Length: 350
Image 1 (spheres, rainbow, N blue to C red):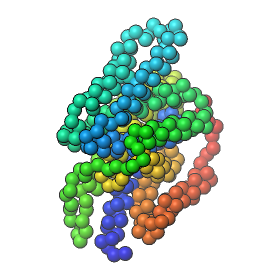
Image 2 (cartoon, rainbow, N blue to C red):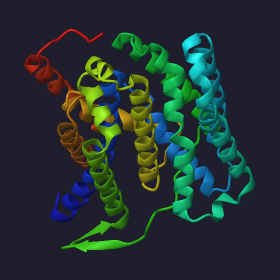
Image 3 (tube, rainbow, N blue to C red):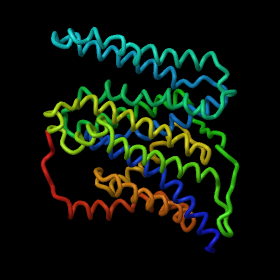
Image 4 (spheres, rainbow, N blue to C red):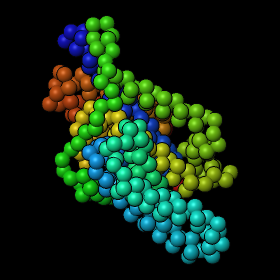
């Protein structure tokens, strides 16, 4: 290994580590707020990448139709939940227009748009925006249908629900996109010289985008009321409820952010690699390894763990490419042992 190869490996490790850092942030956020180990995070990665690939191929993405179906199911669940309680029925009428707009009108408008416009002729930024508009609203809808009724269940029950949602979304991904993988057009063909090595403009865009998004999320948690409410829920769910923070609203918001982060990660990695309907699970699993570094609670440590995972994967692919996945997932074992020996064990909060 010479200096140029090492530079390429470090560049690749930082790029993939940045993606894992975003995914670990989403996993930590969802678990802290809802106690859900969000196994379907990878499906949002795959849906984001494959939806953009379908748009660039001039096809109407079936994820738009899935969004309509999820909206209808979420609307029915919400109406049944409100109509069976007299106190909630009186508060339903003022909220009904907004509820219909979010769950029915908006998904139908997006579906009609994808059927009537030449999507491949749109500018790339518009294509990315349309992809996010289709995929991100699935997050709160899935929370409303699958997780909100179990909000006070044990972590084990929530994990089983997560597994069921993951398997359902994998099956839907196979139905919508088929078994073949796809990738998207590169954001740029520019390259920059760094000494004797070349740095890809694609990698720079990924790292800058991730850094900007993490900075924006930090200021969101520090400066906005809803961000502080999420932090309060993550620190103490019962205390947050006592001071008026809506646990269900916090759960929907955390799932919205997780869906957005997952879809954006899929968009960022799609120009680098072929993505198929089940690729996202393995990518998100590496983000989960990074989140374990932070004990599913600390964002900065999870981000450092993500960079470590990216570098370990990159150098493993050079020294032992056949065993790189094994090496990456073996890293979690000493971390779990260390966490087990050093953590204070407390009873699960009801």
